[in-house]
Length: 166
Image 1 (cartoon, rainbow, N blue to C red):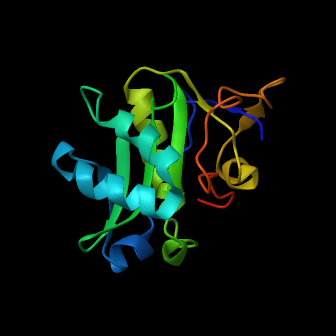
Image 2 (cartoon, rainbow, N blue to C red; image 1 turned 60 degrees about the vertical axis):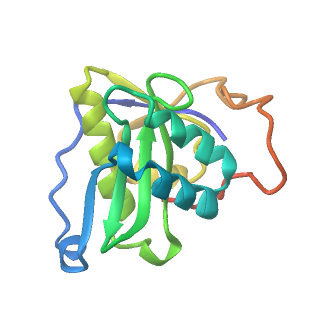
């Protein structure tokens, strides 16, 4: 897996997806009081490594975690500045909600937030579903990034992230 570079200063404007509203899906910034719910969901759906990374989003003065909520349930998330500053991710969507535009909405909410926080570029680290990002963004593969910041990282059994999370 490689790292991708995306320019934030020329992000496309994406129209809202009516299907999300029709299904009662809301994309919004996570609140600190929801930390325990979001963290439990991330751990259950994507493993403890992503839970650890996502926890970092709640330590920032402004939470760097966006969530997709349907009713009272979390169905997706996207974060930034968790592994390292300027890195987008981790991100994931419940398998039952994939194909509705939830991943796209989370991606753009997060990247536009990074731009508002004065980042010019973002790194999408250790990309699994590269085609997803290439579909929506003009990204550049970072030469020599196959080892990435994640090489040498400790993993517990069964904590390898799925490759099709968006």
